Length: 297
Image (cartoon, rainbow, N blue to C red; front, side):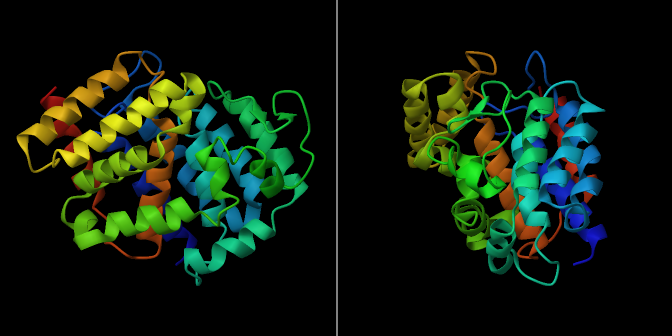
């Protein structure tokens, strides 16, 4: 797959995830005080061309340049987790599938990659993230390669864990869920929401755990599972419970925003588009869906 197509896959994955009406996240019909859907659209535009050149830039440099490009269009962090996930994936040679190529990329990460990533994190200023293991990214230099410093946070951060597991959540769990029964091809929005619910029901969200507490993280799991068990989206009870879940997540503003899960969903969508497991939804279709959502709010 040429770099131009990688750029399109990055851009489309970011737009699809941001457009789907996932509980607790920003989408065309819901925003937070400091972030709106337009910020995610602008961020997608900003990073796609950078990440398409990760093989030339290197993973760490691509992460840093993507964060810089985002800050040029949005003053708040919209996509640090997405960038941290997509940079290694876009570094896989285009003639190799992601599952076949990701291990070599991760094993080839360097201390320079970690240095660039620390600088990127400081620039992005993500809420509630300041340390990776014993290393304070706001003040220190990394004490190992990017994979090694990520491993220090892997027990409490789902994005970091991908670097230690060959991206298992993304390349196995998310891809399998999105592909099940042609779910994504038939209704990409419903498939994305279903994936979000399934990941939260199984693992919770490490962003919620970090910004709130383990009680809220556990409650998010329970509520997501209740939506699925009630038969969403096919039953009235399921549709009612997903609305209740959305209200509960938004009751504390953005604190219960399941942002890490959104990042994992974006990476999963990128993976199925990049490895051609599913057709690329037309840009006009995504834009049309965004307008529909706005008009019904």
